[in-house]
Length: 245
Image 1: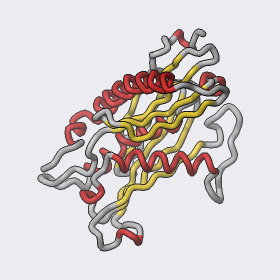
Image 2: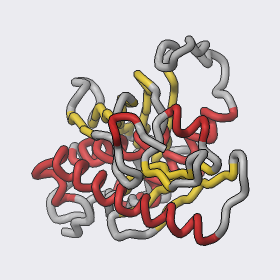
Image 3: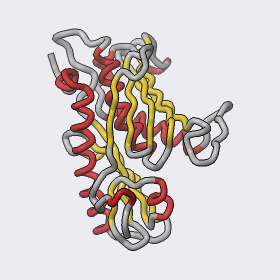
């Protein structure tokens, strides 16, 4: 089965991250993965949820939205409450980012990460996680005090992999590939190579444990490339990640 732009099975779409895309948030980044574009922003506030008051520990929460014209057909705005899909993606983004944070190093502050999909062509949740990490590091730099622990302990990125209609294993599915895949897998991994989350579903056919291992191997290569892109985007800020003192 041939892929768009003649990509090989283990080839990612082109990916870029542009820092400081907005002037108002403490951190922001525009990530483009193929035709998918997600605007990520991080805001820091001097408050925490009630259950953390007085603990000296901070918090991170995430919000995700798909702009009405991001997809081929207009998507109605979620004005009252997020759909089940949106809520699930928000929780995923929050879990992924909190996994690489030292929340005690935040102090009693809350970081809110907003991920808004400007254009969707598959992989919006994985792009959101990858772009949000850059916005998060930039935001944490605004509160970091020299000699202390930087709140972000490691890099984290995400990518999809799947099994095509012909049984081939593909990395980084676009919308057409995702909608026809026999199995679809989203993988979140840290810079240390540790898995944060694996979401896999046999959409049209069950899969084997060997299939899963192949998909994870593909994803690991892609995530390493994405982390290199994060580091390039952050430039001199990349050395802050994981810094103690």
